[in-house]
Length: 141
Image (tube, rainbow, N blue to C red; front, side, top):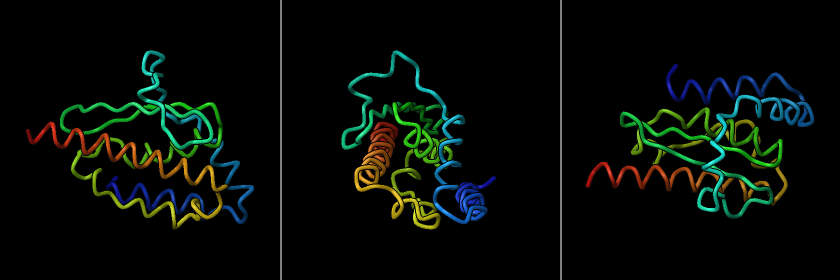
């Protein structure tokens, strides 16, 4: 499945629901698919600043691709980070640094989150892109 096909599939999945209560339930269910971070990586350095809840994101570069794991103490946030990881995992660092996460607007996620969760979403994306940029610099050094 192409990377944009993953975003398109997410959009189609959310189109099955008429209201945001059902979409929230689906988002909560997605938390089960979250690639869990190792306990040793649940550190202050992997904690995302700007989130109302506690969210840890770790990344690693394998075979030229970036992979993420995460955890959160909030179930909706787990679902949100699970979506981000689903779209962003396995891409090159260069691709991630410039990725257009159009599925967020297409499913109405940003406009249906509380202001603090929206800030958290932006913080998670920024951190993941920053990690990718760091790997890109390392690869090109």
